[in-house]
Image (tube, rainbow, N blue to C red; front, top):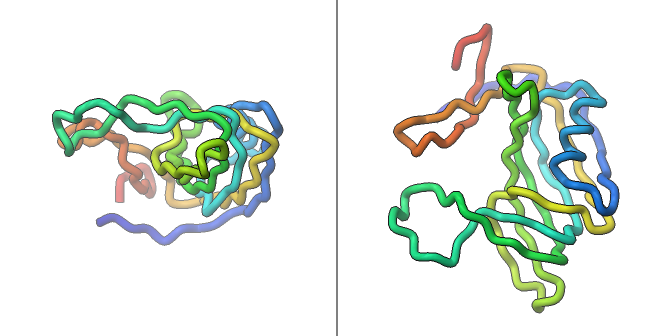
Length: 158
């Protein structure tokens, strides 16, 4: 277990525009507001297209992460996540999960890691900036190289 006391910065209410790419809008918001890390306690959204982690194929190693995606259209979503900073890329590194309902399929629900989405009508989000400690995603070789949220203080992992 890892934990850290957070020094909270600004809290934003953010909306994304119809037809825009979800992650591009999130990146643009962070650049425009000089935000490098934080968390999203919740958002609601309509999504015309969405890609989630998932598969319909047989899974050989049930402990391994699934890297394939499922494509869905015309969904309603609620989600949350964390935003770390990738120093090498100079960009945010979002980790967002959503629970979605397909409007045209009796609101059948799915829940998974969000890979991509296009906004349908709206996204309404609360974003909380974290000033310290530094959030980084450190790849763990013993866990299939999954990038795990880590906390850095004075350049050292806590």
